[in-house]
Image (tube, rainbow, N blue to C red; front, side, top):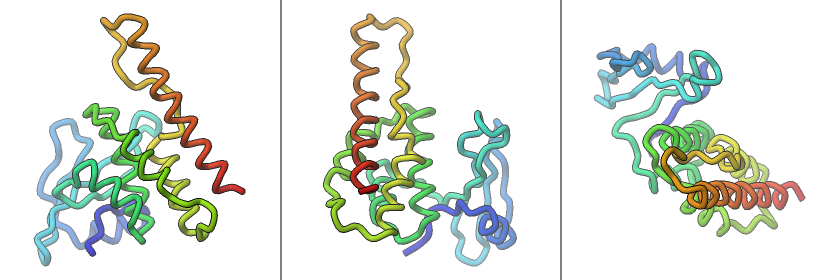
Amino acid sequence: MHQFFICNQGEVEVKLKSLAKTGTSIDGWTDYYVDNNSREEWHLTRYDSEFHGVGIPVLKRIPEPALDELIDIAMTSAEINDIIGASLELSEREKYKKEDFRVKLLNRLLQVDTTNLTDFEKERLKIIIYESDLYDATNRRNIVGKHYTEIESDADYYSRAAQIAKSILENIAK
């Protein structure tokens, strides 16, 4: 299986040495690369740039996975880079493309039997919950022009999702 994301900074630097830069996005936050041997396209992007100045550099293979595929990567990949990258990408798509993933991801997480998880599987669930911001109850939906009941409904949606995520974290800590 091909790797979708490279999040480890040492691995990013090594991979960049094997890629040829083909361009940069207009806003300057994404660099475009191609692997001259495999012809795979990669984008070097920066997640959470609003918190870290330059953000967390992550290489992601193109074409970008669809939302359901991102959830599947996070839930099934044996690669930590892919689990982290897919989870970060879910959060980024929610912030900037308004793609809602929470119900689908929570449904997948709730299917996991947390009673006999390996340490790796426990770490996977923690990574997914924290890197996707699933634990965060902050309302991410636009509030401008909405009736207060709509805003309350949106806030409740995020609050419920965060409560479920925290419950999952408590279950795997037992």
